[in-house]
Length: 278
Figure (spheres, rainbow, N blue to C red):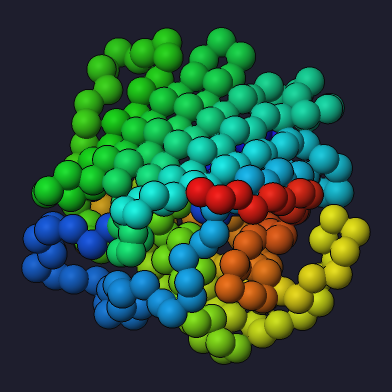
């Protein structure tokens, strides 16, 4: 199993294990896709901005630990920043070695993308992905090492509104998330844009790190947006279905995620957390 397979929606959980975006001046397509009319309005919701914290997550395949991820979210008056690192562990590392880092920055209070850098180190190869917000939209550079025949180039993603993974998850957690409420937004983790739809299933008690926690249970649906075919929605090639639990308080910390993907059942779960001054 690969952490890359968990990158979206799993390991980036590095992306925020919250987060694990941007309302930018892109010219909309003349033939807007019908699903665009269902997007949640761009204004962040009423939930207070996440407090700075440091946390560690355990990531597994079936019920076996396969990876670890550590994240730190910090803030200043204008920005929120996530720095994360993760790696495969145990038997999974013997089968598939991967070390990954992520550094993302989002605006305050708008929760719009500023930049993201994600570095994936495999045996004998690596992938470096950079996402930046420019005046004309979101741009992406994806470099493979060793490089292929065609040199990597910056590419503008011609879609709006659009958020990277960190800003997208911040936007989702900011919403009210009342039972039955649906939040729909477009997230670009670096390879392709996805329509992400979250439905709040209400509260329940969840045991995390040996302690009971009141949690918001969220159903997760992900569909790929085909930029070459009139923004047509297509099934995600790896993701089947998923559930996310956030702490049922103003912090809205991700407590656990369970996903059915092409290799089977995977999960990510909070193991420790420490709130910090900034």
